[in-house]
Image 1 (tube, rainbow, N blue to C red):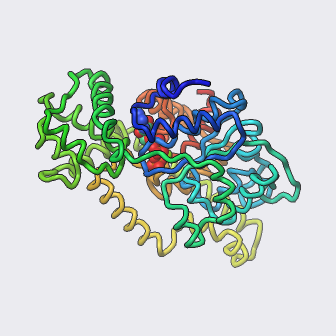
Image 2: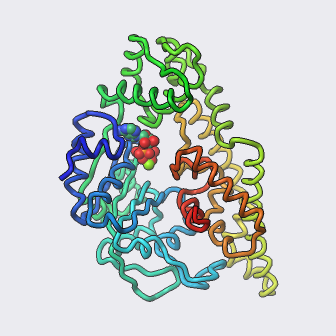
Image 3: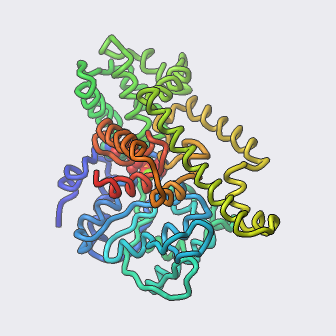
Length: 426
Ligand SMILES: Nc1ncnc2c1ncn2[C@@H]1O[C@H](COP(=O)(O)OP(=O)(O)OP(=O)(O)O)[C@@H](O)[C@H]1O
Ligand SMILES: [Mg+2]
């Protein structure tokens, strides 16, 4: 059995905290079995390494590993994404399609943000966990699959169960073994270690001398609450590495970057930073707008076709309620947007830097995911394809091949990016 230290090296996990070591040890122990594992812990603590370790150390390691972000897939399409659909199961289902549970047969599925799964999908998932059976959307033929499930959540599952948002029976099925990753504030001895590692990485990346914290700044770093955990720490190390000319960082300079510390003037800086890093140049913004428009156009085409085929406008309206809402929006949309905007501002103030990938870059992009995949089958101009490929390649390059970060930058789901990488053989 590989040692905890060897695993940490292999998966680039920094830290010597006892609770972190215990979590890794548990992952090593449970890996060779088929037991379902639930990884819990606050946002940004490093949950995503655990399912990778489990898969890599299991007998499934040569089969597929798929990470699905349950919170990022629209409710209307999640069943189809996970379990596939039959041709004609719904408007736009032009061909039969396999879902992740079918294509990952023999492998491992990581269900990230599992607490976000709609209740109807939870029922389907329970069935897979109980006897490996599932039905494609629109099909009555039972299919079998042999998939190991590792799930993760950063919400309080007991609360979710109490509020009837999550099925208790499913929770117990998923969490046969629970692995908890401690928050950064409880891993005091790891904080400075991680900071030094990130500072050194960013020094190299930006070809600048590594920043170094003065003693009282180190104390402030250790006392800080780190609501965004390691993701936040890494982001702050990056901001300081880029923005500060003086490479020896004083207490007051550091506090300027820690939200809720005195003298913080950060929100404006972060906001600007994020805006600039999301798109490297105007051309990319234009392409992104083009792709979004293409998605809308496809939806409109579908709707027009329905209207032409069927003279009964009311019936078409009823049957395509979701599509119509997607194209024309609904009244609450405005409210939702304002809420989202407020959340974004809050995020900036809190300086939780990396927008959750999974997060929702903007509504139209998020809703587009499924149709984005569908539209690939339709005619598209070659040049648009080429631009898209170029855009994806550049983003992957910028993010050192990290799909998660590239997807976030492109404003699409990791799954959509994965599909495109396969489609274009990138
Ligand atoms: N121990 C660690 N050493 C080095 N980097 C780490 C460590 N833990 C986490 N990270 C980095 O911190 C970032 C956040 O980790 P990760 O995405 O796994 O968080 P998470 O727990 O899944 O959060 P969320 O619930 O928001 O999805 C990643 O870039 C990851 O590489
Ligand atoms: Mg995560």
